[in-house]
Length: 284
Image 1 (cartoon, one colour):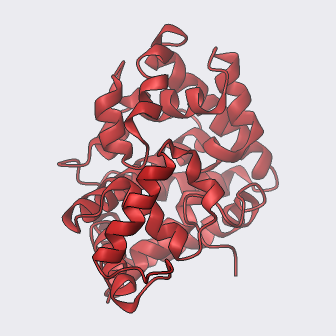
Image 2: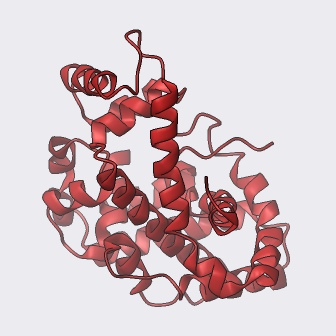
């Protein structure tokens, strides 16, 4: 079971992830990518998320993003760099995120946003870059000039740092990408949110078969207790690997930034579907 530090790390993820996630769900974010020449959702997604790594090719992105079929990534990379450079993709990414957050936080005073950005940046400085490719690449980007840019960038560093740790936990548990997706569908995530990752029906069926052979799924595809325990261990490992920023920030400042993020969580969930592919739980 996750210890207190792990529970804090998970609770903080639930609070900072909606800030980062505007880049996936808000129409202003998509419009900013389109204005940069990146038309079509997946062009913007792959260009924007991989841009901190430079003009990279498909293979390392498929490895780092983990859940996408390699051929799907290959359709976007490296071709997107002919449409927009990594620097242009980064500007579009930040512009869209800031415009989205401005729309969602217009009722909050600047002092609220500045304090939130200050605390999130303090936490993000503490991320461990070793073995965390996406987290480290985002942490190396120049600091934003304005509170909303700083806020979104710090949330993104923390998010990608946590995601790198999650991928490491999946690899350690010997769960391949399509097995991980098949498991999430088995425990209730809407299949339509995950089928667009490029895997074939044959690959999905084979993954379900491997999970059955492993004792994680029954013959009719329902999750077993062994499977729930196994994936629970992955989630616990993910939480444990994400504790350092919050331990460094300390309990009082962590509680404060969580309080400051609360109204952003509420407004963020107005654009994030309840059955979102990120796995964010709906607001209680």
